[in-house]
Amino acid sequence: MRLTEDKVRRIAERLHDELDQKGLLEYREPAGARVGTGRAARVKAIFDFIVADLRLEEEIDAEVEKVLATYSRDIKGTERDILFRKHKEEIARKRGYIL
Image: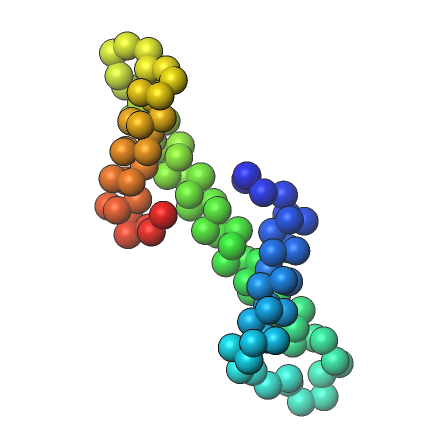
């Protein structure tokens, strides 16, 4: 993964807190739950979503690497970057993934 779990956790916490401050989250704390229990669950859900998305993008990147490995000559530099991006966009589109 390009980001460490700690960074993803901080992103999830900040995203939750900013959405909450702007009034864009609507939720109810479970009856009898300790204060903050619901927040932890919501942050965990955001964290899990981000991690799943990053893993899916890694799978797409791996598939692109396989495609580039089939080329008959070595591809380097800018040409490789352009082909990588082109194939990544195509594979992502086929999977319904938005980059």
